[in-house]
Image (cartoon, rainbow, N blue to C red; front, top):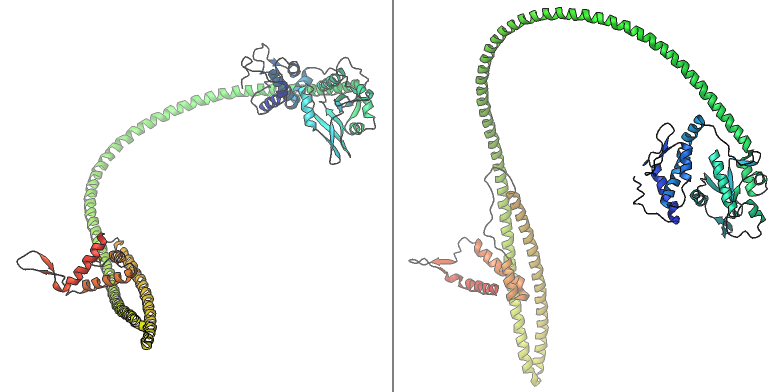
Length: 568
């Protein structure tokens, strides 16, 4: 964190509190190390000054000496002073008590009674009535304002009673002489503005401004809410009494430290005596160690010579043994190679036999499964052909009956029209005959509609059955084609008619009767294709041309008409 005074821009007084809080948080996070060592503290915000290291009290005075020339520097030093008092107070007070005596403030009556610990009173705090109770701002808000004025309060406690906020607050300061100094500065600041204790009780109209003073015996013995709070939390003491207590504590601390130093010095002398004794014994032990080390080295030299002679003998024996082992190892390697070759040949032959055996078993099993599936598929196809042929014959019969019924209906309509023309002369018998024919015509038309609906239902059922058969056929073929095996057996279905072109042509030519006409033509062609004795073409000898047989000319012409429709 750098603090260059050349590049900084000052902030306004309204932003001082916020900036001071940010600097204090930075110090709390450990971004800057204030305490060095030996009771020495450093101000990192004064980069251009020669002196940057202070004692605890000196650094506090340095932080409080900044005016309002540079508001940013003032905010930083306020945060540093607050950090010193709240976080480093114990270390600073200990270093002061051990190095220098505590001095009471000069210029105050030593017999005047103050409330101890040091307490300030703030009166005439603005309040407002809400829901039957008086409310006011929190104590932290007033504490921040007092801290911004360098009074360094510890906490501010607003006083409440059964009516709510009483308009008074108690300001607590530190329990040391700097805290007393801050309390007196707090009182003087209000007295300089004529807002002290006397001004508060003497004023007839106090207005909206705050009044403040340091709590003394008058406040302690008062019957107000302030007196009750002071009697609960504090006591009355004069400066001489507090100074005597501090001196007594200081004397006791010095005595304890002196006793501790004497004990440590005595302990140090004992340690020095033990150290000298240990040093003498260590020197004797070192001389004995040197003698032992010399004897050890001589013994080691003899052992090395003996070991060297034994090693030479062992090496000679080892060389002879190595030569014999090399000869034996060469023979073993040769035999191992021969055995490995034989074993490899045997292993290859065994693997080939095993693989051929497994392939034969697998092929036999797959052949058996293929034969069973082929027989099952043949039976299914046979049943399918028989069912389709029976349905085709049934449809042809129904179509013939429907055509005959249509002819009968047309004939009756023509007869009715003829009788209608003849009955214009008023013949009664012709009218009766016409009525009878009309009744018969209505019945025939009803029968025709019934046949039409039945035919449509059969066609839909036929389509559904055909779709189911085709779906089963596709699944069976997909199942066969999806098998991954070495067998060469499979199924290939050829010669089936595709009914879609027939339906497309019939819809374009007949429209209303498209389904029945398409089924009729498709069934006719399927019957011809299934007949092995049917030959649609005849070959003329002496020529390579093929002509349509005379028996199939009508079928050829009908197919050409459908072909023309498809081309359109």
